[in-house]
Image (cartoon, rainbow, N blue to C red):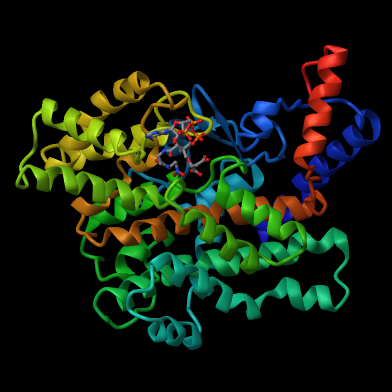
Length: 443
Ligand code: NMX
Ligand code: MLT
């Protein structure tokens, strides 16, 4: 595999660099933690290593140093499409080099050859109770594939540490190849008992999802799939889903265990499920106004009612971002092009004018701007995916791209078992007292 050969060279370079830093500067302090940070989920504490992406609080997501706009411009695209091959994005995030068309297609071809789902996974999904949340189905289906892990077999046969990344790469390609098929199987089984399709060899990975849910006629939806999966791929590794995967994988649990666990984190309303909750909330606003677009005043009243009931405004705020999420902006452009007159899209734009000011006035949220979930469901809904409890599965399909790449790199860099220390309240109090005496404000 040419991809693995290119990656091997990169890994050698970065491995040496990290080992050298560790040997020469091992005791250098790179981050300090205040008591407030300690009790606020370690916000703003630099604790994780990843070159794959970085979230700048004021400029948002960067994939390998490039903005989202640059990435969408520079990666190879299928003929006639405005959005890149996911295979090209994968190669780029993995190696840090913009791939040629041929290099993007190498990943697409590998995925095509590994996309089929084993029958027992489909049978298992069909056997689950009909009220099972699609994220539970996704997590279970990934876990069901775990018995196929090449890492586990090779580890059992004495796999050397320097080769852990190679088996992780194999598992990663196997799982990501199946991700659209898994999501489509869940969709087809849960919402209509439709037959499970095989991929269309003439379509790329992203557009194949449209084909698998019987929307191959819908070029607009194929375009949305390409954009959607690209935008959801990575967001640093501090977010709950990626961090969970990295933590689980640090015990040398394989890619399947790690990604299944990641999906359980993504299923939470403060994380990926916010796309489902946003759509439900938007439909609630419309239905209060008998399905018609409400006035600005009515929307403001709805926003305040939500806040006064102690609820969060889904799709707004962020643990890191202090600006509008560029992933929101990229989707806004898509909406302007394809659905400018859609009522939900109009409502999304109204909220963008209203919510940040309301959150500022309320004075609690540190990030008040729109995040990726403020709009993603609206685009799906317009394209006919009305089953909004499914949206987080689509987030998961995209996120598996970034997560698996981080796992490959974590194994390549020999990142050890994650094991921070916990301390008792009494110990915390003692440290505060000791430092109040010494005048040092840091723990
Ligand atoms: N609406 C109402 N209150 C909010 C919001 C919001 N959108 N965002 C933050 N707050 C509140 C938050 O609940 C907290 O309240 P309290 O002090 O009573 O606990 C306070 O403001 C301070 O929170 P922050 O430090 O600004 O936010 P934090 O970093 O803890 O959390 C989120 C970040 C994303 C969890 C939070 O902004 C939120 O709940 N947003 C709505 C849900 C959402 O859109 N999640 C998706 C995030 C992106 N993703 O895809 O994962
Ligand atoms: C994400 O894409 O993971 C979300 O924006 C949440 C985060 O970054 O913490």
